[in-house]
Length: 347
Image 1 (spheres, helix red, strand yellow):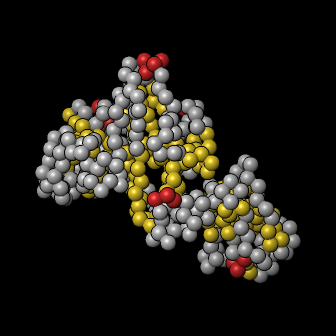
Image 2 (image 1 turned 180 degrees about the vertical axis):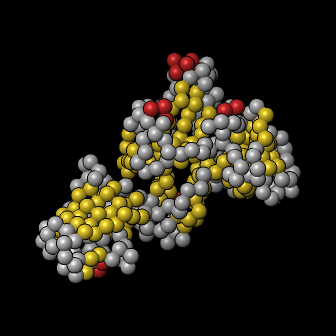
Image 3 (image 1 turned 60 degrees about the vertical axis):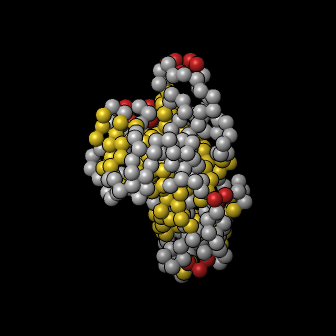
């Protein structure tokens, strides 16, 4: 069964704040409801607009597919520029990283964002000029376009609109910058013509983050036995559930030759015990699905008390750090918004 649009979710992190501890693991109980007010960001009141601010929110695109299907060739971008005086960018995140002081803990190094087409272009051209919302998005640490980067050029009003065109290109060479205007040379040429006033929002150009395929996974599998007990994690891998999995380290300890206990390194997570004669599938009660399944067929030979198995599971999700910058003396705008978007392929 393919991956449905309804199975692609956005979730917040366990900690949502403006402190150094902001971020961390994905919160399966904190879904972002598309189109609802303050679903990621708090309102910006006058005192904050007067002095300006830079804030961070960590979000996860989760593939909640019941068949554990892999989400291939994901692409993540910002689909519009904000209508207010603020601007948005994002960085790649990890499953566990925290904001840190002034964003120092964020692992991503490349910024991604969106600008608007500066002037009309015809099909067949090999360069375009994009206007970004602030000069800082053209050069420096927050620059959103760079040599070798993937960009999306599009004039669709919504990501899945049937009206409009879109195409993907790669930047060939260092972009040329003049203030807030960035000229990009493309590898190849445009397949379509684009205008600044196409449809409702005009033509936008976004830099695209391309994470690894999204699927539940495990690694760092180590079994330590006093005797000749083994577990074949190649022929009988840990099955990581796309809905129930979390980022955790699991330690299994045998209490005798057959039975074992299991402990997670995540506070508040309690794993039931099991037996090597039965597939082990501890339940994630938050979503009524197993965290993972350890197939019984992988066990071989004789296990003994205090023998252990340790492995790490990774959920079917990709993390990004959204960043909102409010310049000093920004004006108030009702209905300000941004649209982080993901596309990919499912089998």
